[in-house]
Length: 290
Image (tube, rainbow, N blue to C red; front, side, top):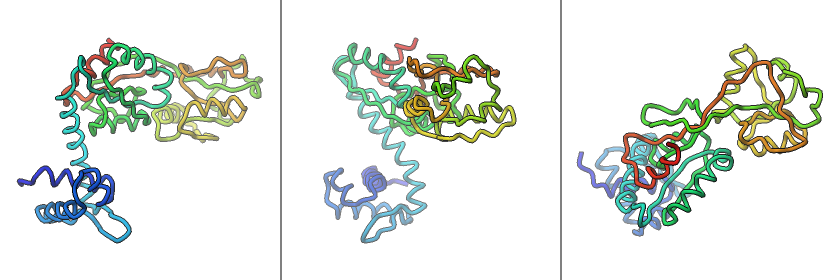
């Protein structure tokens, strides 16, 4: 089926903004031209792609299916355009996906070094959970990701390199001082309020799996999306927080709660899509982890 790329481009902007007027602004064309393009695409596909009303625009199921295919294609085209313009000596950009914890406690020195080595290259960092970072990579929205591993979302499309090993720990403040010097079983831990990352994280998957292996049901007292907030709540005595050891603060008021069961080590990995050409800027950044 021979359909003009510009029709798909208009569809992409309407579908992602859910607004004909906003799409016209971003495309620098009239709203009537946007409307005509969508009608032409719907006629060629013999499908209704949008439900239009006076208050809002909504994708039909067929429109949602099309967007799932068009969005990665648009991102790949943008990426290709950027790579054509990209040159380590004259500029360009690198797009990195990582969680806020990994950015703050691991990536910052590498970003600083890269900026000093290649000051003309624009660095764009997108913060998402390690699980969602894989989606960013697969859809072409980032060039590489740094995530926790194991990561159930990492598939065959990515080249993965382990760059750091770490252990997770339980930390508490002196309100739990009776636990100092003891090694707690997981069952004993359940007698105390557990603070941890929410279910949409690799860390949550990891800890729940460990408890399930011992046939225990972990019901956290508090689930958040930030390790820094977990540390703050542990500091004021709201419970025992589960965090990576590389972000444990130096504090007299906090201590590591030891466990009978030695927790398995995890890794940080850097991953990129092996089926997509890698830009010069990305290759230079990856060299830091060789």
